[in-house]
Image 1 (cartoon, rainbow, N blue to C red):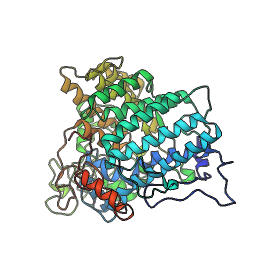
Image 2: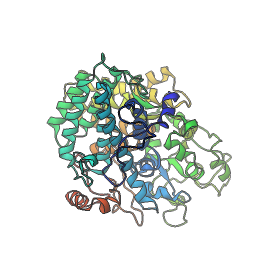
Image 3: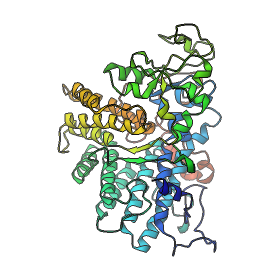
Image 4: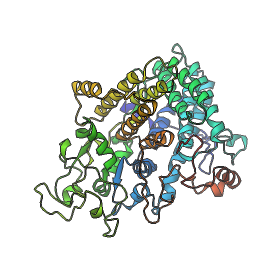
Length: 535
C-alpha cells in the first residue's frame, strides 16, 4: 500500500480544470510527459487520497460537523477555531475552512475528467469507469455540503467555459445516480485491472461493490423528497451487490512518512486541540446507555493537571465507568457560559479528588490515542453504513432481500469490527457477538426502528471519524434529536447549521451564476436547507 501512496508525489496531472479560478491548462512543457505517453493509472492514487482527505481535518469536517451534530465538544478557548463547530461562531479563518471541501473535490473531479479521457484513448475501459465513479462521489459529497453546485458546465475550460452555471440539486442527484449506474454496469472483470489502486489493488469486483454501496447511500438521501426514485436505485444497488463484509469497505491506508497522513489525527494531535476537544455528553451518554463495548476503546479520562492534559504521549484511563462527555456550547471565559456553570459539572479534580484548577475540563472524556495516530485509516465508505442503510430501506418496505433486524445486526457488528481497524484497543469477537444479540432492533413501530437505526448510523460514522456523513444523515433523518447551541455571535441564528457557505471567491470569479444559485437556495447562508434535507 505504501508504494502506491508514494506514487502520488510523482503524479503529473494533465489539464486540471476546476470550475473556479484554481485551474491549469494541459501541460505542454517539453520536459513533462505528454498525454500520448503518460500512464493515466498514475492519476488514480492522488485523486483517491485527495477525496478521502477532504472528508477529514480542518477542511471542514472536524471544525464544523464534528460538533454541529454533537459528536464532540470543545471549550474553544486556546483552539478558538473550534468556535465554528461547537458554538457556530466564526473565527478568522472560517471562510477558508468553508471553501476547502469545494476546492479539494473539484481538483478530484478534474483529475478524474482527465484520467477518463486518457484511459479511453489508451484502451482502459475499467479505469475510465472508475474515473466516473470517483468523480460522481466527489460531486455528490460537495452537493451534500453546499447544495447546488456546478457540474454539467464544470471542468470545461478547454471548451471555453470558465464561469459554469450551478446545477440544482434536485436535477443533479438523479443525473449522478443515472451516470453512476452506467459506470458500474460497464465495469468488466475480464478487462483491464487498474494499477496503483490504493483502495482495491485493481480488483474490479470490489469496485462494483463500492459503486453499488455508493449508489445505496446516495439513493437513501432522497427518501423524503423523491421516494420512488430512492426506492428504485436502492433496489438496484441491493440487487447489484453492495459490500458483503468489512473486507469490502473502502478505507484509505495513510503513510505519514511521505506526508500523506490522516488529517483528523493531525488535528487531534495538536496540543491545544488535544486538550480542548472532548467527546460530547450526547455521544458518551448514548454509549453508556447500553454498555457499548466501544466506549472503553474510544474514550479516556486524562491524567491530572494541565501539562498531562496537553501531552499527547500520555494515555488516560479508559475505564468505561468513569467516562463523562462534555456538553456543547461552553467556554473557559469565566462568564455565564463558562464550563463551570454546566449542569453536573464534575469540577477540576485530579485522580485523588483534589482541586486541580489549571485543568478545568480534565475530568471529561477525550478521544484515545488511536485517534492521534497519523497513520490511522480514513474510512471512506463502510460495510456498517451499507447494512444500516439497508435496514432502513427494509423498514420502508423496499425489496432489499433481508429483514431490517438482520441488516441492523450486521451493521452493528460491522461498526465494532471497523473500530478495531484503528489499531487501538480491540473489541473481542465474543463481546461483539454478545452485544449485538443483547441489542436487537426495536421493531415495535416504524418510527422506533428508524430512530434506532439512524442514531446508530450517527454514532458509527462519528466514531469512525466521518463527521460530515454523520451530519448529512442527521439532516436527512432528523436523528438523533439534538438541542442546538445558541451562543452569542453565532452565524446560524441559534440553530444547527445545515450547509456550508460557498467559497468567497465564487462571487468574484463566477458572480452571475453564484448570485443565481445563492438566490435560488434562499441565500448563501448556513441556514439554507439543501433539497433533500428533512430538518
